[in-house]
Image (cartoon, rainbow, N blue to C red; front, top):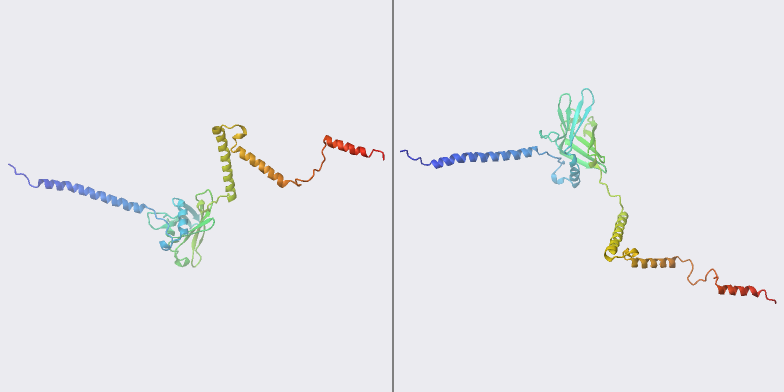
Length: 293
C-alpha cells in the first residue's frame, strides 16, 4: 500500500505561486518601460538662458504666444555655390530630431555629404519682441571652427507680423561669419502670432450711444407690446406712457416759445385789426377832414 506523500499541498502551492509572481513582475516591468518610453518621447521645449526663477513674465508670455507654431516644421534650401548646398531645418521651441536628444532647434544639413550641424539649441533660448515682431534666438550651436574665433554658432529668427497667416516665408537672410566675435545666422518668417492684439475701434462715446439706443428700442417695443396685448390700448395710446410724453412735448414747446420769442409778451401788435369796429372808426376819421371849416 503506497504511503501518502507529506507536504504535497505545499509543493503544489509553491508551483502555483511561481507563475503568479512572474506575471506580476512582468506587469511591473512593462509599466516601468511604458513610463520611461513616455518620458523619452515627450518633446522638450525652449529653456530661456539663466535660472528658471529669473525668467521674466514677458519671456514666458512670448514663449506661450509662440506655442501655435511648435508643431510645425520649416525647411529651406540654400545653394551658395557648387560646393555649398545646404538645407536648414527649423522648429519653434522644439527639437528638430527628438531622437538625438541634442536640443537642436535649427539644424543645417549638407546636401553633398549629409553632414548635420546644429546652428542653435532650444535649451539656450532668448526671446524679445517689438510692436509687430518677435525675435527668437537659439544659442549654443556647434563650434565655428576656424571662423569667428571658434565660438559657438547662433541662430537669430525674426518673426514678423502677417495677419491671417499662421506661418510662412521661412527664409535665410544672411550669415555673419567673417567677424571675430558675435557671428550669427539670420532667418526671417511671417506669422500672425507676432501681430499685436487688435483693440476695439469703438470709442467710449460710441459704446454709450449704442447702449442708449438699445435701451430706448427695448423700452418702445416692450411698452408697445404691453399696452397692446395686456392693457388693450388702441391707436396712439399704445405708445408707452403716452400721456406723460404728450405733456412733456407741450412743456418743451412752451419752453422753446418762451426762450426763442424775439419780442416781449407785453409789446403792442405790429398790425391793426380789420374788425367792423375799427373800420367804423377809420371811416369817421377819414370824414373829419371833409367838413367845412
